[in-house]
Image (cartoon, rainbow, N blue to C red; front, side, top):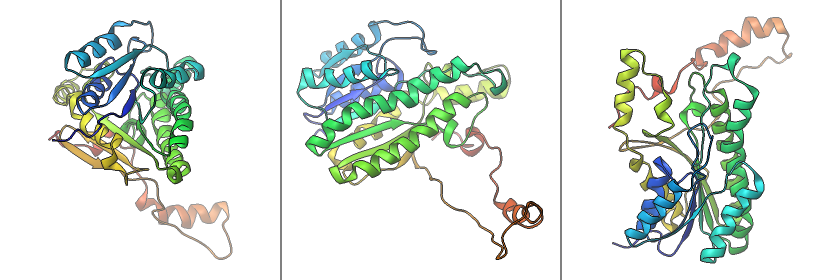
Length: 304
C-alpha cells in the first residue's frame, strides 16, 4: 500500500508524549520526515527536558523513519519560528504543521489567576498562531501546505473549570478558519481536530465520585493512537479538497462538528425597545436557546 506522506516534511508540536507522539510515529511510518517538537515540560507547562522528544526521534529511527528533535517553546514568537527553521535546515522544505502542543491550568473561573489564564492562551492560541505564521510564508511561496490545529469540546461545547483552555481552543477554530479563507488561493489548507483520548493532560480530571471514576475508566480506553490516522490523512494530498473543517475523533468515531450559523430570528418593523425585547424577542427565541451543556452531556454514549 502506498504511503500517504512519502517524502513530505511535517512538524508536530508537543510530540514528546501522548497524542503528539502517536501522530509523529504514524506520520513517519507513512513516509514523512518529522520535526518532533517538545520542550518536555509537565502538563502545567513547568520545567523542561530533552528526553521526551529525543525518545520519539529514536523510536522513529528504530522503525526505519526519519526525524529530528526540537526543544523550543511555541509560547513565544521567535522560538516558535525556530521550529520551522529546524524543518528547513534539516530537510530543505516544509509541507505540514500539526499544532498539538498544550498545557492545562484548570480552575473555577472566579478563582482563576491572570497568570493561569495567560499561560494557557500563550501556549494554545498564540503558540498555534506563531508556528502557523512562521510556516505560512513558506507555504505561500511553494503554493502548498496543510495545517492541522487542535481544538477541544471544552471550547466547542463547554466544561467546568476551563475558561482559559476553552477560550484558547475556540479561538483556534477562528484562527484555523481564517487561515483556510486567506490561504485557499495558494492551495494551503487548514483544519481542526478535537480529540477524545486518554493522555497526561486528561489525567488531571477529578475522580472523587463513582460517576467520575467510571468516566475516567471509559476515557482510558480511548488511546491517543486513535487520533493519529485522521491527522495523517489531513496532512496528505488525499485531503486536497478538505479545508476549514472541524473534526472530533473519539475512539473509532470521526464526527464532523457544526460551526456557528443563524438558528432563529425575530423582527419588528418599528424597531425594538428594551420592553419589547423582553415581551416579544426573548420568548420567541427562548425555545432555541442552548442549554448549559458540557462535553459529556452531548457526547453521552460510550466510545465505540
